[in-house]
Image (cartoon, rainbow, N blue to C red):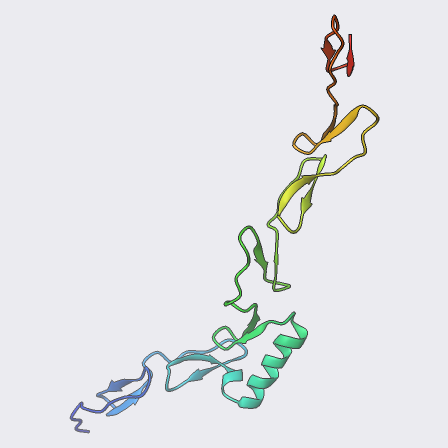
Length: 159
């Protein structure tokens, strides 16, 4: 076989001077759901070979997998990559929804799912006390004491 070596090969194929033809130099076995493509010289998702398979996988991803989209490169269903979560939130790859990251709040606080910050669990205070949102507790409402008395914060009274 005499080859002039000026043949242009398709895709990722390379010219083989022994056979005077273009071929994949790295043929391989593919995992389930994939087929070796002799032009691209790599395993490709079976769903991209047939339009019916593509449509079937796309519908399955959207309707049965939380509005995910079909990714032909991984042959799987994924959350859309173009959707970005607002600052402070992260994508839940199971539900394709933005959510707060794992945050442990102190006992007197709970996670606000809108702001992703810990907020006080509001309590009604007894008479003479007011709710302090910074300290998450009822604090004594300071009063002015008559002359000769001083304010006692612990007793919440003039002494």
